[in-house]
Image 1 (tube, rainbow, N blue to C red):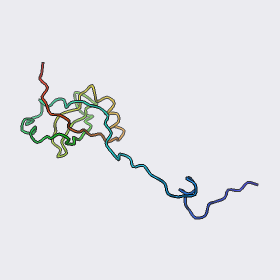
Image 2 (cartoon, rainbow, N blue to C red; image 1 turned 60 degrees about the vertical axis):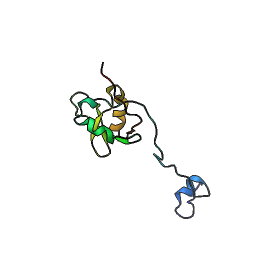
Image 3 (cartoon, rainbow, N blue to C red; image 1 turned 90 degrees about the vertical axis):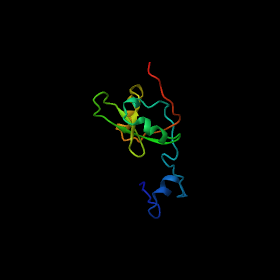
Image 4 (tube, helix red, strand yellow; image 1 turned 180 degrees about the horizontal axis):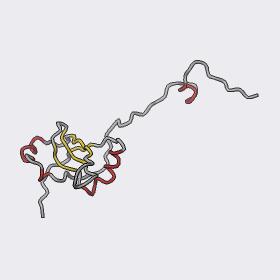
Length: 121
């Protein structure tokens, strides 16, 4: 009759990984992962953007927050500074996959790489 032999102690790591219980655990989000390059849309509709612009610096973190009740785009992702000041939106053509990731509780954020105005027309 075969018998299940319980290892000494209650060390599940030893059972799963062999004799040594020392296991190298990976840390999720140990470093930033670059997913895409885009621009901030809708800045011309932000009141006071001209006054805010000098306070936006290269490498500043930009928070991405879902705005599913947006009347113009149910996949809208608003872009804010870490202080909560609204800067604009992730462009509609770029928010399809990223809104789904955010709806699945994935944390996405941006990093300011350049500052330049896009001329209309």
